[in-house]
Structure formats: structure tokens, C-alpha cells
Length: 62
Ligand code: SF4
Image (tube, rainbow, N blue to C red):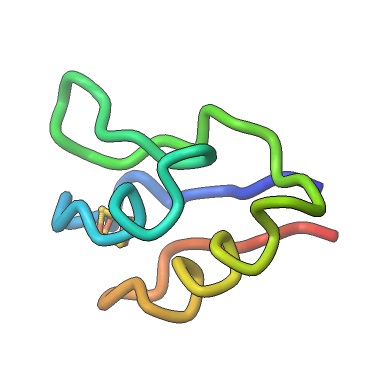
């Protein structure tokens, strides 16, 4: 599984990186990037990040 961030619409709030740092990090441009694979271990956190993103730009592809 992997996470996808619509980076054009990300507002760089950092919430996803706090909820699931194994998958999301803020890139040099201040926007989130999905750098890590979604695994069984971090799936719940990745889904929580998806649901918590204030502008709903995260998609977990299963
Ligand atoms: S929670 Fe959403 S808006 Fe905030 S940094 Fe992550 S992807 Fe961007």
C-alpha cells in the first residue's frame, strides 16, 4: 500500500507528519510528501492522517 498526497493543494499544516511520521514528512517546500511505504504496522496511523487532513488531500491506495 502507499499514500499519495496532492501536493498542489497541501497547506503544509504538518498534521499528517505528526500522526504518521513513518509515512509523511514535510519537504523543503514546506508541503507534505509521502516518502514511506504504508505497512500493516503504520496503516491505522496513515488512515488517521488521511481522515484528519484539513484539506483532504491524502489518499491511501490499497
Ligand atoms: S495534513 Fe494535509 S494539509 Fe496538512 S501537511 Fe499533511 S497533507 Fe498537507
